[in-house]
Length: 601
Image (cartoon, rainbow, N blue to C red; front, top):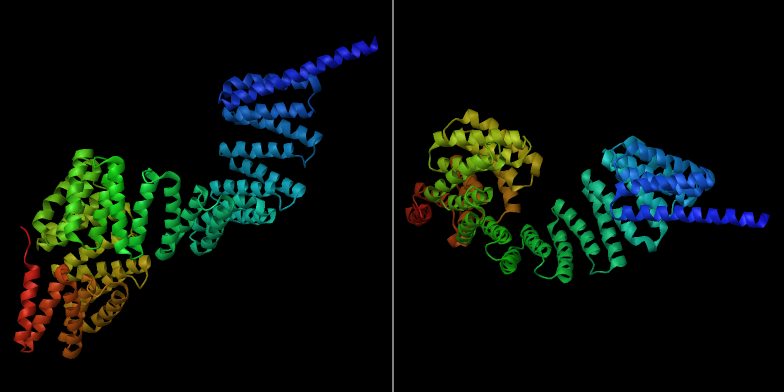
């Protein structure tokens, strides 16, 4: 009879345990379906059933409480979730001990709960607790310890404590390395996270070997045709780009692009975008022929994939036109920008910022060719659209103000140019700040205007400010810095301060000779100015040596001759005429006149 009674009690306990388990399965199913409101009463029932069946201090009760806390967290009930999880934690600590995986799991949930609620101090407390517990229980070469370090580093990154985050990412990398080769994928992710912290702090040189190691680990784990490997290559290529190490970035990005092509095919949008970026990298690396081929290939691929009436095709057309503009292939750039203007009007309408941008680009190409009469109405139309759509405090509106001012300056209409330049300068100061290249350009343009008007006292402080800005931004071996030296030298020369002007010209010419082609207009402009200074200082041999060097470069340029080339020819011709060498001067003067002759009204 006693045995029979015991059997009945055992059967009821088994049924109770089965019912509790069924409730928890229902909770899980509701959670998996995203029905947390439906899961909540079931989780509460499970807690009540466990407490009634086995009491508070039991592993089953802790499990039910952990599920309840999870559901409450998903519903945004942070305090209630914290109470449930801390009850579960206390039970597991008592019943299972501080080295049990389920104890660690609740600590992880508490850290995640407070992080999602942006209660970072509490999240850090629980995160630090679980890291220390796992280290004690598992050692510093265990994958779970390494993963905990990474999560805690992510938390400190979110709080803005970059120093603490960096330290933890370093510890995580060390732990993953110690965990062994079976955890290569996780180690690669940790390396990338640490490298990302270095990048965020401007420590680019320290990030490079980490990204390279991550890429190699990813290749070993996933193979050299996997998108995870491609992503790691992208990280490395992006870093090389940030360092302007174009020739190193190019093969890395090219390999990643090849993987995208193999995985997704030639018509995939992501691959097509990468193709355009690969062209930009080739351009930056000085591989202009290859860049043009890739830009053209990207355009044809966009046409095939989406047609000429698509925004993607328009973007690729703009890329190709921009390349031809930057390489001074004016006829090609003009044709492509005219087509881009037509397409943007048809696709987006004539009050869209993209339509205004293409008008502006076309105007700049025409301005560069001296076709001011054609450029002016384009800038005016673009300015009207940008004012209406973007407002008068927008960087693109300032760009068009600047371009229209350049038209008036080139036409000698200084009173029209000055307010446009001044307004562009004020907008750029407000929107980009005084440490931005656009602000430097506006300083320089306004200084040139004042110089042209003979207001030298206004021009000099602007030139000095622009020179210092370019030095900070680009360093002392950059063409932009050289141009600022050239402009300041020209100002001093016009004031008769030849001793101050000469070293500025000499330094500018040396920089440009290193960084630009010898037929580049900017290089020849500085060469001409230095030669004219030697003429003024009665140093004819030094002057003619420079003129001859410049003439050889103009001869090589051929049909690509520019206004700066005409200036050199005129200056050399005047030098020869003054020396009585009229027969040598006249052909140069005729060539200069042909270059300056307008090609269109």
